[in-house]
Image (cartoon, rainbow, N blue to C red; front, side, top):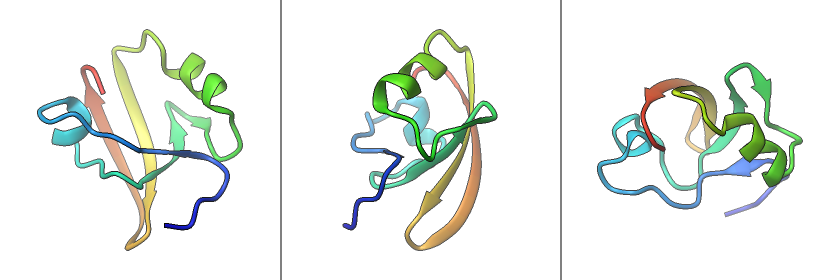
Length: 75
């Protein structure tokens, strides 16, 4: 898989909100709670999503253009 700059999903825990929300390994997070994630570092991304009860993501997948997923709970 070609890796570009950005934040990618590398692991999904079974039964977690990310799993039931439809995220897949390899998905790129474009946006989280209206914050642009295309050029952030991992530490910046973590700071943006820590202690959030609800996380609304805009993600991209190699075989799909963009999806908006919203989930409550631990990702």
